[in-house]
Amino acid sequence: MKKRFLTSLGVLTFIISAFAAKPALAAGDDLGNAANNYQLYCSMCHGRDGDGKGQLAETLEVPPRNHTDAAYMSKRTDEQLFKTISEGGEATGFNSAMPAHKTILHEDEIHGMVKYLRQLCNCKHTS
Ligand code: HEC
Image 1 (tube, rainbow, N blue to C red):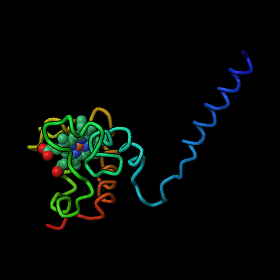
Image 2 (cartoon, helix red, strand yellow; image 1 turned 90 degrees about the vertical axis):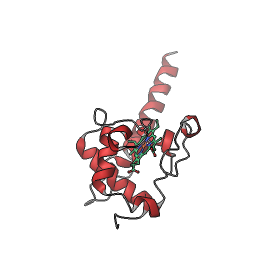
Image 3 (cartoon, rainbow, N blue to C red; image 1 turned 60 degrees about the vertical axis):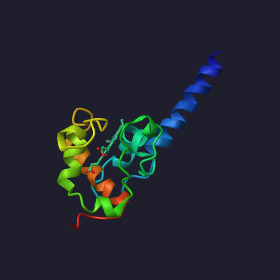
Image 4 (cartoon, rainbow, N blue to C red; image 1 turned 45 degrees about the vertical axis):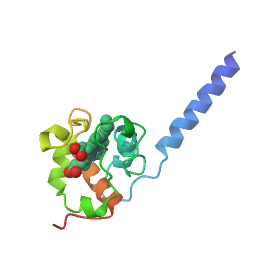
């Protein structure tokens, strides 16, 4: 019994260190933990790759935005994206299914998330 406990403790330590050892983001970019946060807080709707096809997508009235759509995403400013993530869809004229994250994510993390979205679309604001 004790041995089994120790084994599971070992496995747990392994799992935790595997996560902790995840390649740190390249020095100089300030994405922070955005990629992980995206998987935790956004992927169920927006999809693991940001294509808008998350597991919950079909249950929503309005499809979650496809963050890999450069044509669309380049029309949005970073400020607009920040505000929608922070205050939720309703605050910016989008569907209320898009939740507010300001109580979950720190301001810096939301800035990091905007940068991460720019990576997903491989685009910046142009028009
Ligand atoms: C419960 C599902 C759900 C979750 C979770 C969710 N979203 Fe959304 N999101 C939506 C929906 C639905 C829309 C589309 C609203 C519309 O088009 O009216 C949307 C729209 C957006 C937009 C579009 C804003 C624009 O300017 O076009 C952004 C950016 C966005 N989400 C980012 C995120 C990020 C980042 C997260 C995680 C921190 C997240 N969302 C989590 C459902 C979700």
